[in-house]
Amino acid sequence: MDKSVNTKGGVRVRMAPSPTGTLHVGTARTALFNYLFARHHKGTYVMRIEDTDRERSDKKLEENITEGLKWLGLEWDEFYRQSERMGVYEQYLRKLLEEDKAFYCWHTKDELQVEREKQMKSKEAPRHICSYRDEDIRDEKEKIKRSIIRFKNNTRGDIEFTDLVRGKVKFDAQNLGDFSIARSINDPLYNFAVVVDDNEMQITHVMRGEDHISNTPRQILILEALNWERPQYAHIPLLLGSDKSKLSKRHGATSVSEYKDMGYLPAAMFNFLALLGWHPKDDEKEIMNKEQIIEEFMISDVQQSGAIFDIEKLNWMNANYIRSLKLKEFRQLCMPYLENANLIDKKTDNDWLEKILGMEQERIKKLSDIVDAVKFIFEDINYNSELLIWRKSDKKDAAEQLRELNAIIEKIDEKNWNKDELEKIIMPHAQEKGDRGRVLWPLRVAVSGKKASPGPFEIMEVLKKKKVLSRIDNAIKKLQ
Ligand code: GLU
Image 1 (cartoon, rainbow, N blue to C red):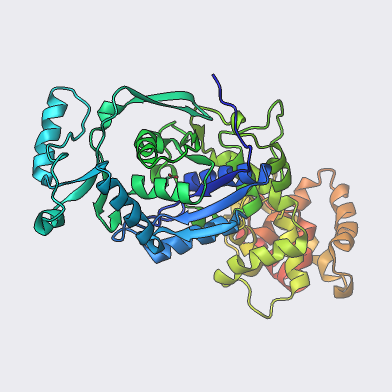
Image 2: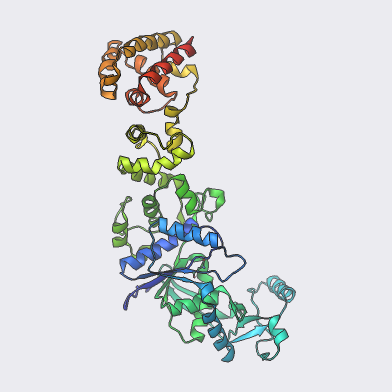
């Protein structure tokens, strides 16, 4: 199977999203593969908004897509919008009509439906072989108004191409029928506009989702009719949910913007998406930065089977990237979430905040987790008194330990209020009891209200003396 990639004369690839929905993670992955291929081969990465469907295209969605791609770091070298190129498509539609390679078809929707049902009954491929294909209606304005433009498909036999991911692919040309290419002379359909643009933009490699593979033979027929050269094709397997069906809302968030809002880092998302269906040859590495991925990306290493979007793996990877952030950067990224939750405001001291966030940086999976993680520092805590009791101990003992602690803590000077000092004073006291948990467990629960939290001394440092004493008092009351 010859899947050799031809990159002679330079590589030009394109990303061609339709602004009819928000940026789907699958589209982002396709964009990423195009980007990686272009950067690896020092080629050009073109961005083309496919907005010829005026009814379904939306500027806001276009913005969501471009913002999402920029956020991921997939900057393009050239940018086009199909709606601004309508004259170009018209020119080539006219050419095909004049050369008798395309024609007007005025069959009604109902007529086409009847034809389709008949074909289904006799188990034939649904297609339209048009009885108007040889009629010349150039001068019949009324008929033209009711018509769409179809490609006159005279090809017999197989249309073959070599896909860089799937190898040899072929389709029976006859099954395509006389397929539609435009709603009217100034309203081209996807298959037509794509071919014109890929040629005009000198695209060398067409890399897109596998769902477009059945469009490829149609596009090949159009470009051959226009005497244009074929690009190389690579159809990338779809993303699947955990149950191996096509990834959809049912499986959770599917938009890049949703992941951004939840606090996944762009570098983690970049890394994660790159490894969906691709892996560097002979290498088990998982955490790779942008440069490494560009360096190692080979289209021939893209797998043929669908790739599972495993949220657990994304969480693991994101946690890795979060851990490696500098504390200041981590704080800056967390602040919008904390502000939104009204936990902090403009007056909040940054050094203090960094101490709080530093306790959780190792523990959270995504930035939005920070709100629940640190809420207990800012807001009153509420927990079940049972939680204060250490293993085989009881309410009475827990209350006793907390009373003793209160007496010790009262005496600590606020000037020495930091976790090392607190540890130095409280630890020996806990050791004396033989079982440190008897002291440290109720203390930690009293100040955090949680079953799992950072250690008691770190929490006490940021809560400061007054709040610590009042929380311990509250705990003692709960135990009575
Ligand atoms: N506009 C098409 C889409 O969003 C692009 C397909 C292609 O890359 O040719 O699926």
